Length: 196
Image (tube, rainbow, N blue to C red; front, side):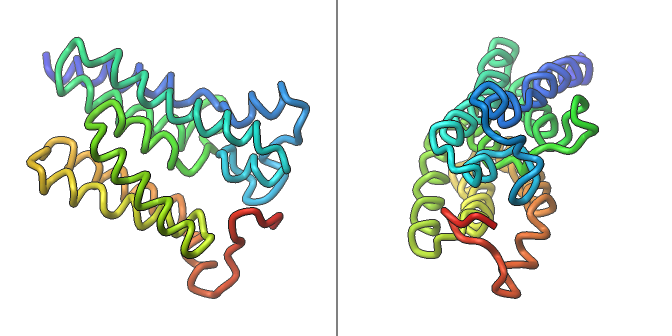
């Protein structure tokens, strides 16, 4: 029963997570397809490279909210459903079936799911992200540092289920940022506000 519940809510989360809001918002706003500029992904940071800050903000908000929505909808069925929905939403954003499994890098959805699961950890994530981004002006570095801290913090406060899930999500997030990591190490990564 638990396995069936987990599969059902993982599927629900996936469907919500796979909505490509960066692409939808860009098209509705008359901006370039985000897959044709910058890092060629559908996330808010890349939408920002079109010069449309409002569209980037909308993408960030919607990509986060789809993760939060998946978790909150599933909350009526217990922790297993919530964790499964969060996993599904994150996978849906990273690998959306509608875009040949080529999605975003997952930072906003990572945060959105965390808001639904345990909001104090989401606040910590946001604070760390802002601090690192302000100091370095690298969005990718801020995401990597904040995500790495998240499972540690969750386990520290006894949220073992969420901590285990977020360890897996962090590894996936690092995988999706592997090119950014390479550019960071070589000094070639573009900074926040950059056009490359």
